[in-house]
Length: 109
Image (cartoon, rainbow, N blue to C red; front, side, top):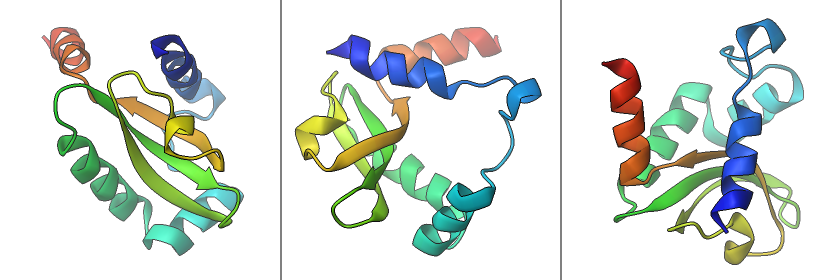
């Protein structure tokens, strides 16, 4: 299962030369602003939900294709987003497992 989540995760990492590192703009940026008021508030919501994950898991920005809106969801362990419902399509997944934080810390040292 972890392969699915990490495959999405690696595709989300885009170099700045290809538009990465910039706040979303266009229709995605507009939809984020409509759904969460701002990118900053979306980030705060994802951070809060991610921090609430106990042990291992993921926090996701997804589109609910039935409700036609953006949502923030979490999954435990390596469970893919589809376990929360078949209408959820992942846009961005962040690994909030303990090993992920250790890897980020090592990169920063």
